[in-house]
Image (spheres, one colour):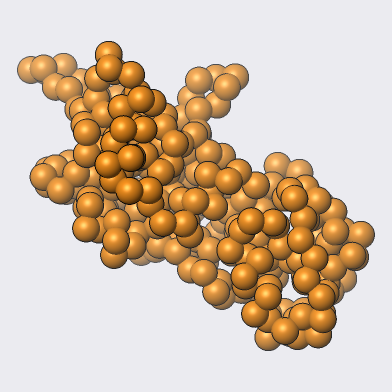
Length: 270
């Protein structure tokens, strides 16, 4: 599991002064940002991302912007007639980079939080995403309430370790990687593990494993509402993004994108 993914959801942002310095270092003094229009010239919108699959990343083979958020912004941009440019930085510096006008909009599975709303404006919610519960394929466990007294697993250094500690398991086993975590389920070293739902969903889409299953339906303990972020004074861009998002949500493509990356109807926000 990418550690950037964990930071974006559950860790505090770095102090703003430090973040600005990091953002300036990351982009270089010659980098430009901001939307550009010139008469009839096609508008270019620069998105900021930490380049994490399955959320918003550049495909190394094709150079195309991919991921849940990436394909959603592509769809909105296509409907608006915009070109999309990508600015990449560490997740912790994305808000600073946005405020420094290195990019126009943050598109990177960013949770909408009260602290972040003090710094930037968010669009309407794009989708919801939290943790998933993964069990062996023949397991009868159906919710967090069923795991008391069971052997539970999580990945080292994640908030999911705190979650499993609170569930009353007979034992908690920690693993250094997502692969090791899933192998423990497959080999029945654990009865259930908890991990990021988008990451595990995407992993199982890419490489199905009949020995594992996601508990479904499942109500996350750490639910998150995802949005795109813009500067406080960029009110027109915010309106344009929201109108484009509404069009996308009213089309079949919205659910198609979610399913492509291992999410589904439970993650939709109408």
